[in-house]
Length: 199
Length: 199
Image (cartoon, chains in turn yellow, orange):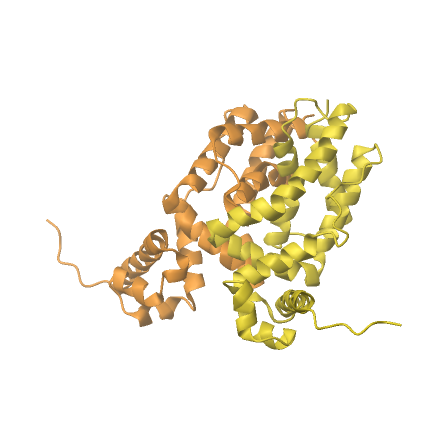
């Protein structure tokens, strides 16, 4: 028999935060970043505006937090890339998934909004690097280091440069909408990167 | 002896256009894109607001035109990359110049503003590709083709991919302010690209 529980403010607070972040993400996908307002987010989340301002100073901050929530593993596990021992296969899996994500309107709209903010806000750019891009890059570099140890990648390769060559073309193509984000393109970037940094 | 000239409306018109584009570029550099208004551009250029609206539909359009004017050769010569016969030296020259340009606040502010517009405006992105990025890419590919013919680059290399690998990392580093735009970084990108696409 379940016992009667007293209201739990911490739990309710967590539910509100979650609803706000969900609402922010959904609205950006539906109407575009420019047209989303704090009012609309509050209405969609079923909270008051003041509840949002209690936790976040601006629309940009809510968006940023919603993106962070999106990329955080629900089980709280460490970020890690697949490691089957075959760096080419593993990177192709990851790059194809990345290309598919950026081609998905529900995912790409908030990321595009955030990127747009980041470009014009050095402070937010620094936060982005520290809290989102940085940890992801570390996870990717751990996989690349394993490939170096296995002799699949030049031992003296600059891993930041490897990541630049691997990801930047996809990122730019997405940002400028200058070409399709296909599995073939993802594969081509892996091939080029492994050729450039082969032992 | 110079003869008395009648007022020349075409010439005056050209001068106004030039003044407006200069004013737009200067103001963006000084106060940032967000704070520039059509009013301020008009005041700085010494023209009426209506003169601006006669030629351009929006602030974004004026910025775009001012960037185009910046990249057009004043002598109206064809765009061409240096060709000393040494692809590595030529690309390093070009990439170092590109890195220096993006590190220059006077140049980078309007380009950053334009990039920000492009990200959120697929129509402007298409114009950008057609009128600015496209012609530049063709000039770059002409130089790469010469290198292919000279046996300095793989004959079957996809030249769009070569340009992606060469330029995207620099572009992303600039956009996200994630690292310094040094001559060393420019050189490293050339080295990596030539390694990836060597014959």
